[in-house]
Image (cartoon, rainbow, N blue to C red; front, side, top):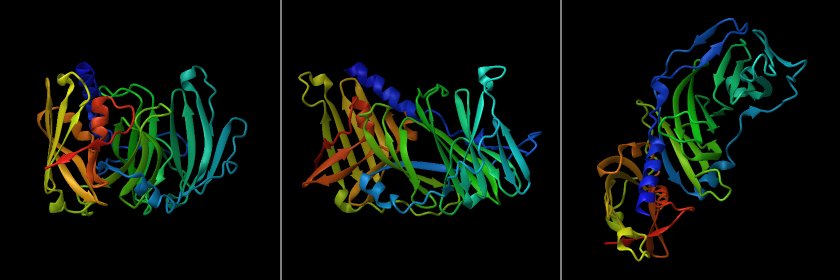
Length: 362
């Protein structure tokens, strides 16, 4: 049991081991209409994405208001004689399918996917040998931008998010599959990559709640019965003055909350004591037991009657790479008693479903 817990915390920690690659990979390849030259757009300012948990009720509340801005019409530019011809004001863009000549690795298959009105771009899905991407073709000029997948555009048209399921082993410290989130900025009609991060959760559905916030329905694995989580991705830059998603923590939350993991085990060495000490927005998380000790600083935010936690830093033991996993969990009151929902602990204990941990408060 203890070996299993050690392995699980290592796997969980690997969730954030890959750093934001935007600084080293912050360009979007653009191709001229004659495909004779490749031009790299200059690097853009780096974005920050904070991932925290939300409830299913929050996710469902705003979903109906979201409008998919892609006008789908696959017949507008059909495949004729193995190629697609996109007509733009700047000339024709001809995309020829390759059935795999001379090698399977050369295979390319183009399909027109629709028109993205806010950016005045035609979208073409490209499927290759063990890879795929999306071309965004400027209707006015014929210029092509390469996106990692089909785009979801913020309501103001200034940010593009692509969510790509990646089954391949591409990251040194994160085993596949991963959900690769790429975000692009749009300034003066120029698309630039600003953020790339793989995550261990798998996206099932997402939409933009507002110009800075994306709501995501995700699962913890590919199994049909994998636990479902609801997340929010808050996108900011160093110059943003966007207010925090929650409010200041009220004095009513102050106190020490505790629970015991594996409490029913007859072997006391399996017991792990978990404690959350809350003092305003400062929260100290401690877990201790036989050959187990970790202490983390968390940040608390009050929202919709719950106290939500985000990882801040390691104080003792544990692993600093947990910093990339902000969905630490939240405390709420249920039938007069406090309970904890915590994706971190679910993975920590090897839970096969979302658990609710009863808390004692003092």
